[in-house]
Image 1 (tube, rainbow, N blue to C red):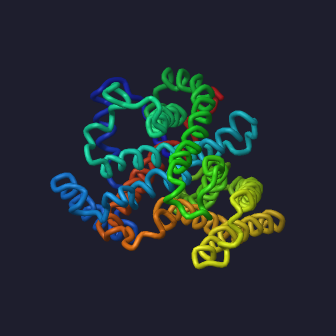
Image 2 (cartoon, rainbow, N blue to C red):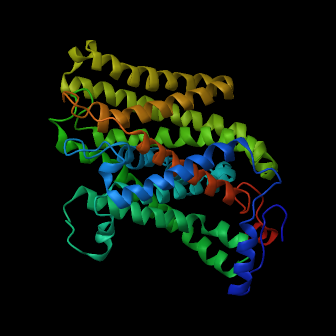
Length: 409
């Protein structure tokens, strides 16, 4: 057993089951931490609501209707979730393809975040389907449409999640002491990364492409032919802002488990990521200006919806872009972290605006999520955090790899 990487040698199924059972034991003597006290009641309540949803249908727990069939669950799981998980494909491209090896300490953390996000958010989509047992039709070939954008998105979701699993699998092999499997999985990593990048670009834009058919239902300030491109570009700075935000928290929560290399490189990597975020946000803001000019919607900026639009574009895009530049130039981590928070708020606002607030903004009766929808969404997030914490505390993600793996590199 390795104290840092928590690795062991698994020789048979019995050894694995014994090892895994021991790994399920909670760490630390104090289980009544603020995180546990807050999240456990929400998760338990969320599970009760999920049971009610499957027993009595969507109408029993949501405010969805024929006029508004997509609500908070779709808006968060599909639109917001995949944007915030974009850091995985962006950082893998920077590290594996462009060859910037200084990002090595955080690659596994980012890949793990992406894998868990796609696994939990794609799984949570089952809650929103009227017939969840048909969710896997795109895999088995049962009455699906080849020309459907959702058909493409579903396949991309599935294949990209598998790609992320392959990319993270070497860490699992190190944890279990599977040296032969580790060598095989390492040879597959680069291919999985390249394949995953292509898939991610496809479904980031594909989800935006869904709204191209809803021109009459989306407010003119948010509708344009550039929506797929805007979704791709925003996923770049959204994903990296999430990396900065999560990294700032993880550096405190998991400080004792972090390797020296991880701790020493943290500040430099945050500054480097801030520069990339600033560049992507500048491109996004420029595309927004082109969008307004192309659609000739300047006059709408002085309306109430226009003021809301300006809050999103100026307050949560242009402002954090400037803050990222200032923080990177002055080496101010606090400014960069605030810029990351503003950027994340901006992406969340944009996705919520497109699918909820600016969607059928003219309707006399609008959709608002029920408290049960909010609780279930928090349940998904908190459960993901529990799994993330369990993995970080046991596998060599932020800690040192075992010696045999380091020597092989």
